[in-house]
Length: 376
Length: 99
Image 1: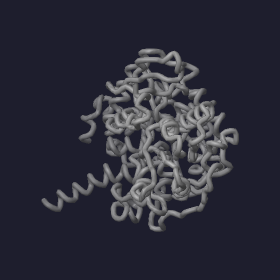
Image 2: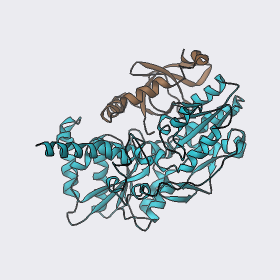
Image 3: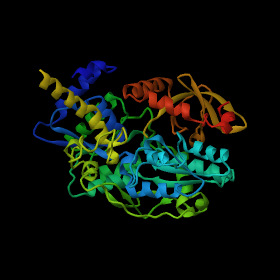
Image 4: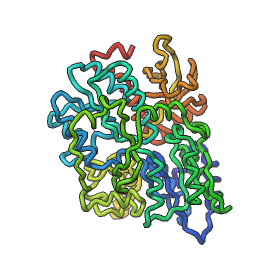
């Protein structure tokens, strides 16, 4: 419990943790999924599990865009960048994600022009600054990020910039939640809804989870108190046998979402009939592709893409971890072959991936305790 | 990926209506306001920034909270690195973008 004193309002945190203990029925086991990778990171970072009774299990969801991207898509993006005069531009998170023949960083070491950008609009500026090259932006992300890519494509078209394209890997969160709920080996009681995705899509898209699946949802902020309050919200509902959508993150998330962002997405993107997710397989209408009106800026239409499906290394159990069937440390490779320094699966790469979060905060802590114990 | 960085609008540009100069703990960069076109911020407003785009308006109090959350998450350095990276300042041909 040492962490509690480091929180901003330790007394409120303590009271909220007590409230959780009071609300949780000791004869029941609760499985609550936090959908967003940012929440997963926060939960491990703050050691929030230590504040919860042992019959509340937090299951880490699919909301880490780097983690759910199948390896074949990384290979496809890199194969485009192997063509002459192409610059591969991507967010820093992508740089260490392994493809079949190495990560973008390893390709850079072998001579590929790979560059980090912090914004899709900077990839567009890079195209303007390099008129004799083609800049391909490797776009990833949920609805938080997709509107920014959409606006960038609108700007490319409006400004007649033709040496720029987007390799679109944007995915949508609702179909992934549906796939998890449809999965026969999953049993969940409630959801902690993603914070920043919801600033764009609002809270309405979750209503079916309450209405059809009878499961509570609390859209949550990222502070320790936010997450604990969201757990209180869903426990109260479960206790009262209710299921509704609550917005714990009202200070940032409007119920209706951001209409300008949704319009930009609708103008530029359409749903793909299906898309492969690492660990979850093919999910229908779960990803975005670029509309024909923007075909010239669509890397998949502009370049030859191998489109080869690559299976994950057999020993890695990313799929089971992603679905919450296995805990990170229960994977055969965890902490041995697969570490944040030398990741085999994408869940170990991103700080939002549950394996990296578990390794950095739980595994190192446990390893330290074991080491100290063995010395003593 | 889920980083949302709080910043204050310090300057708007009449000839670039979807751009604002934003201050994030002393670092100033141009940020795109296109996603807030239904409710444009004015000078002095606080916004949350994600990948170079302002995605929502927030109160000053929430901005302070958000910065503290990033610090607690151990992500304030990554956030500042991201903000400093906006605008490709290190590319010679885009020096004017930083001005």
